[in-house]
Amino acid sequence: MITYILSLVFAVVWVAVTGSATLHNLIFGFALSTLVLWIVRDEMGARGYWRRLGRILSLLALFLKELALSAWKVAVLVVSPRMDLKPGIFAFPLTVTRDFEITLLANLITLTPGTLSVDVSEDRKSLFVHAIDCSDIEATKRDIANGFERKIMEAFR
Amino acid sequence: MMDILLAAITALLILGGAGFALVAAIGLNRLPDLYTRMHAASKAGTVGSGLLLLAVGVHAGDLSTFARALAGFFFFVLTAPISAHLLAMAAHKVGYPLCAESVRDEMKDYDKRI
Image (cartoon, rainbow over all chains, first blue to last red; front, side, top):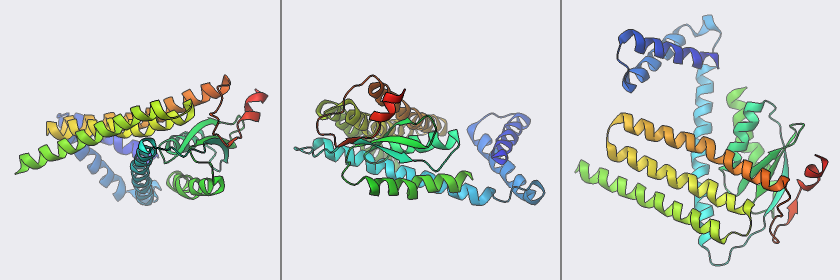
């Protein structure tokens, strides 16, 4: 995490030093500082940077795919003449523990097909999720645990 | 040639965005209770406005506008689920019932403890 912040700080410094505050220059500065930090990666002990960047990008790709799919599913459901609904609220047992990870997971769940996070229990052990189709809760829980939750753990642990 | 292509992409994005916004509105009307309505508002609504923002960015044709449109989409994705989640949570806390078709409510016992 600290490496990303450092890259960003270096990028801002680059913009200040070169004296042109355009978006191109900021991106160029960011790329440059990332390269510099990559050169000294062993000395800084930030070897996981590249692997982690790949995982974050893969999480992002998964998320965009799910978002498109979920909007499409809602659209199909809403315009179908007879809406076949089996809504309900179920408790999803959380494996992630940090507040930041729970927030991210809750947001991702809301934007994926048929699920909407409602609340977190006081002890942070379960997330209450409203699902539009509650006919197979175990499968939904499995999908979340093996999809987003695992990806979040891979990306931020 | 490039102009026609850009115009076509913009038109497609606008039509898609407007379509999803329309579907979100229809969903708000047709779905039976607040919880299911939030599904339509948070998902179809987000994608609809996201596509419209992208259309603005593509049409403007310069990078800074495009970057701002992307940032708008990013913050939309960040905030829309939170408002949906807060509305659903508040509704559940004050005892707004789930619709008659609902099959289960594992949160019921949790609310009573507070």
